[in-house]
Image (cartoon, rainbow, N blue to C red; front, top):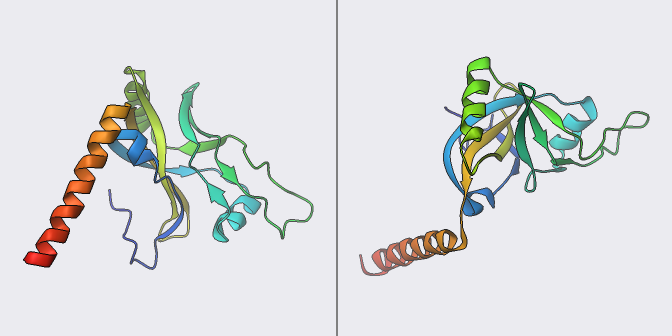
Length: 159
């Protein structure tokens, strides 16, 4: 699935869950839409969003983004949204059944990885189907990352 690159002018990252790749082993990812209110979209355009502590849950055949924070928009006078409300995510029926089957396996969860505006200006979320890492797994991946950095440094200096 092509979600653009950081150099692509039509791809603007709103919020990124950088900790997810450290805390979870990501098996697969899926792009989905989200139902928002007007003041939420305006707040996202100025950068008032955090998905670090959020997760996605399948309930009654629907997919929900839980515990994501969207700051109140200063320009909204009369109608203001709730900052931490549950937001419905939009996926096809096939994707929904795949996600439900994935979360039924032991230890699997749905973690938001990145929230962005696509080339049409719509807000999209990339969800990762993930399994939580234990401390020794985190240390191993950190050691592997450090070794690759050292290796590239050595190649740059002596290569």
